[in-house]
Image (cartoon, rainbow, N blue to C red; front, side, top):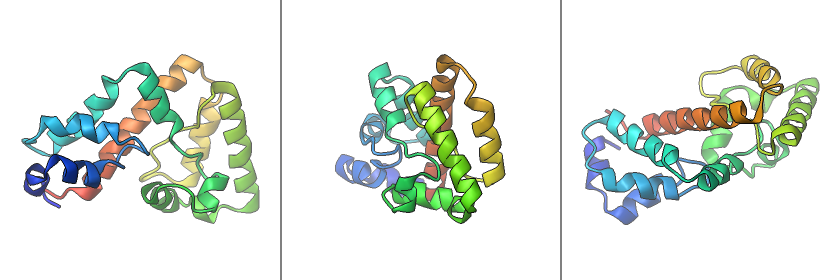
Amino acid sequence: MTLSEVNALTRAEFVARFGDIAEHSKWVAETAEPQRPYANDAAMVQAFQKAILDAEPSRQNALILAHPDLAGRAALLGEVADESKNEQKGAGLDTLTADEFERFHALNTAYRTRFGFPFIFAVTGATKHQIIDAFENRVGGTLAEERLTAIAQILRIVRFRLEARVVT
């Protein structure tokens, strides 16, 4: 889809097309939509990211909690959004050895126990080893650091997803 086509969509069409950009959080697209017409791709990305950054903390927290665990049981059972599934597959998380899977499971459990939300990492372009390294480095952080990092990673995920859907 081109940017011109995006700008020509009705509000309902826009939300239907982009309501899943931010993991099970249609409100992001609903908030970004009135900023149309977008002058360029960067303006579109900025509208989505601004919707997240300007949201109430409770809405941001719900968005963080909507993300699946990386290489978690939901991913194995196919219970995650298609884009999450494809992103995790692209990073090699669908080919983990038994030991790697157990490491991810242990890290997911430790991270959720410590922070109360899933570890979020924009896996596009990353390898499973880079993800594990980031996981191990971040699990010892503070709650404030990790909440900010989670939001920053969600902003990256949104950008990657929009760039994949809208051609210039």
